[in-house]
Image (tube, rainbow over all chains, first blue to last red; front, side, top):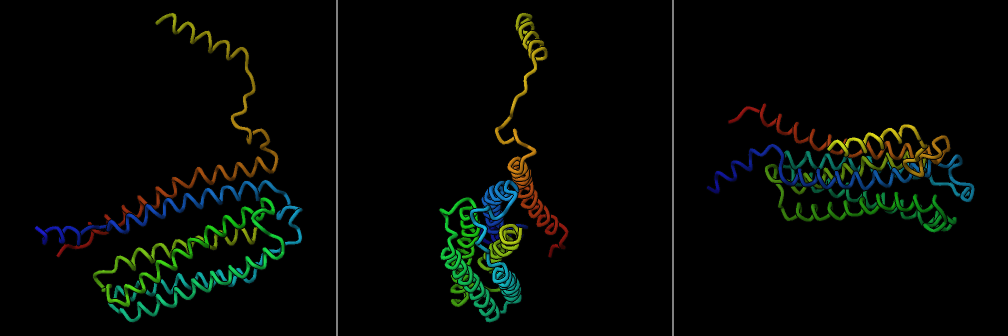
Length: 196
Length: 74
């Protein structure tokens, strides 16, 4: 009977884990949609952007652009990790996961230093609609990157313990999908918040 | 029953005779203003998102099942 069950599991077109992560990402998309919708009201609703009260404050577009490239690169390395485990190359999986985690931490570090600079320049959460929507939208994404990095290092720890193989890699699979979501979301936010 | 239809018809006739301008929501009052346009874009975006999310999830499920059905069985 157990054999039959495993056979049925093996033929499942879409695993429960994948379906679960899809539903989670659906909810995440709606969360960010609400925040982007709020941003659109303020952005389109203001003829001058940033509002006159924040005229002197410039967002670091170039540094964030480079940071965007780093995050996109981390998406590539994550896919490489996923491909490596499909070919049963566990050592390559570990290396690619480590590079991806490092790129994620670098992205967060650069963003953190940007925030310190912006707060010193007077852009705070309480300094008006511009500061409020900037920190909520970008901060919400940063929390997601942080959670993705934590998840990635848990997967890395499991890879070090030899828990993954070419036939059993659901942890890598779900982590990759989540990482790609977080990476794909960022250019949209960058264009909306920094370039519009 | 006839009385019910009479009163409903009378209500409709009165509503047609005395038309008033109604505002559906406070944001729609100033559609030509930038803030009205902002609300418009935001609402359109938020209307589209549930369909997009549902479409992507159901599309993924559909593709996985179709791929599984077309793959040759051992």
